[in-house]
Length: 248
Length: 383
Image 1 (cartoon, rainbow over the protein chains, first blue to last red):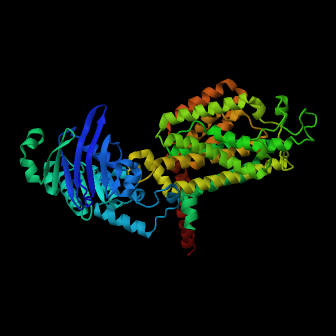
Image 2: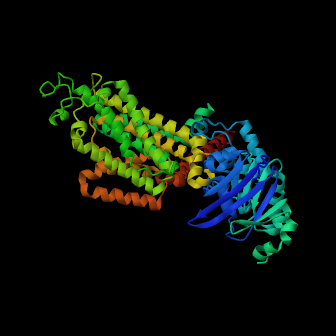
Image 3: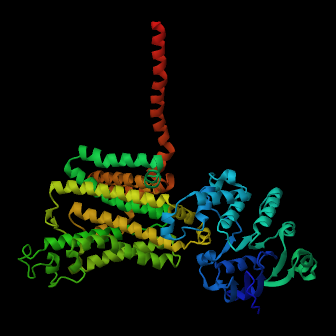
């Protein structure tokens, strides 16, 4: 047990079982401040479940998830977000019927209560923040475009932008480059390297080239357990990892 | 100015629609209809409150309530209780075995005014109760459902069941509620004869003013960030939740607001029609309200009013000549709307209305083009 409070995220003894099947099995995992950490592993290893547990979508059977001294397992989803955890879903999860600008505005972290949202004003501060984020995610030309009309890659960026506008301390991305073209992958890698300044980022990814481009630290998950952790080279040469994952 | 224009009216399109509707119900109909027909339109317009509430709740909130009759009824009964108490003064009811209580209570061997009737002798209390009781009831239902993330069909069925329970309760407790006959024989409001023609005119205009205010208030909600969050919830509820919103609170609020609007409609119904009965609470009226909104356009506050007027005119005309066909017709219409034009009349107007307005524009443009040339020609000829 580590009492180190410098970690942004410390997961200890985390277990979740679905009808006896342990999708995550007494997992211990620590994420440093400003660290960009990639989790890889074969299908069904429990990667997405770990993100679900952190953001409150799935309730843990036992164990603890501490985020900046807050116990996340006791909070509701929206409270976890307000504490500073942002999560991007595997398939682009944006509001197709709203424009890019409205998507970002709905994600803007003020006016989140019922009456706050009624009184919310789209003032210059809000617009300049939206413009700043739009520029970062390469969508500044498409602010008035209905989000459903964007390309797949642009939708993924928009969802990242919707998280960035909340300025989370911990950003979690579930397969951010799935379905992207080679060029889009490169742009996304640059984007991730840029936005990981000043916050911790946890990424789940399958694409090893992409992982190599961004990762500072890699953890390999298999059947709900960590089988290797460290920098890319170390993990790639680990015989156990080669056997269960890379060898396939 | 831009606050009124953008937020309360909904821009150019909203403002035009609002002005046309206001002109229709405030000027055109009162000028052309006799007082009997106008009173009928007034009655229809009270249903429009419920239809507008369903635009907010169902069209934008994605929450289908098959129980808006509950709240329409609560508002209507609140007003009816006040009027009934006024009509049951000891002088008016001197022949009863217990004078001073409503007649139906006396028939049911009740000798004392029930406790929950007492405060309804105050007009102020009644007005507050008409707004607060339905909203509080909606809060209870909403909190119980939405906090547990019950939604969709389940929610629709539960609201329907509550509508049935409330009807059964009203019918069963005849001594307390007037039973199946409802609360009838309402005469005066603070001493003012509500059955007179002048009173009916005044109620009609008060009703119109309230309906237009409700549309403006609803527009304010829909054009605010709240409105965009409702749409976002319909599209990706999880994304909204994981953007830091407590989605249940938003649904509860819109459900309570919708309940309050419907209750205002119910209260105005009682005032204009002169009675309230359980037949405006149960399943059939609740579903009819959904049909009004669907036919008018569930995404259009103003369309819902036209939907209500149109269906009710149809009902009046058809059920006079073919009473047994009407239910089939309205059922068929509902299916047709859902299958063929899901956004109702308002959707049709959005899709095809520009053909009509363009024709007008074309004609006026044509005139403008032709006129100067003709004038120029004349000038040339003169030279």
